[in-house]
Length: 280
Image (cartoon, rainbow, N blue to C red):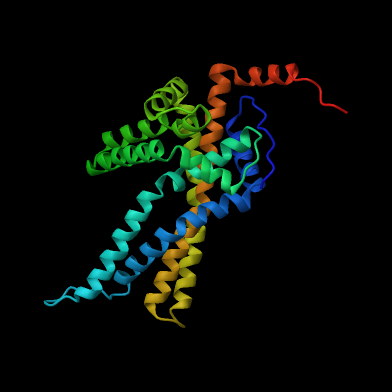
């Protein structure tokens, strides 16, 4: 169990928000990273197997293709896709729930996180399927306008999952409330997300280069297939280690928006002043 200190609500400047993100991640690193990596393992292993099958040249386009190899590739790929969909609420929301609990000063445990996400499993699954459908729809139209529209939607929906957890809300209310919280602060919210993305990409790029070097070295000692599978799986797991950064930022953005729009920090201060003194 990780002991949590309640988030001191106050208007956070962008630098303060990023500092608080890394502070919270360090405080619960083993739990947050462990959950993220465990959830990434099944799909990462299947994707790694399927893609390495191709990269190693085991799937060949000939007059008589090897149906067994093609079957293995498609089985791994679609198996990973199915597993990814089924655990979507956990992979995208487990750390968000843990960060919400930590910000509220509640104990954070693996069991509590699992139960918290499971209670909202179907609303979360519906939301993430909706979000991914919107993303896919915009991706099909390769021009600037839909891409900018997707960015607008992503920023406007940024607080949906924290709202679903903290305010026990459904999809429709959470989407509407997130839009109201972000309204008038869209550019600031976008800048926070953009800077977080830049940090993420810099770290991921550096680690990705190291993995490529390690793969080249591995190929001198093991088969190309095994080296490719290890490299691809490792890339997925490293991405899982970095994902909590984004998820914690989203929770802190939610609280910051509520402080700025609803003076939530004043309510917290009033509650503390009204609370009876602790017994000595």
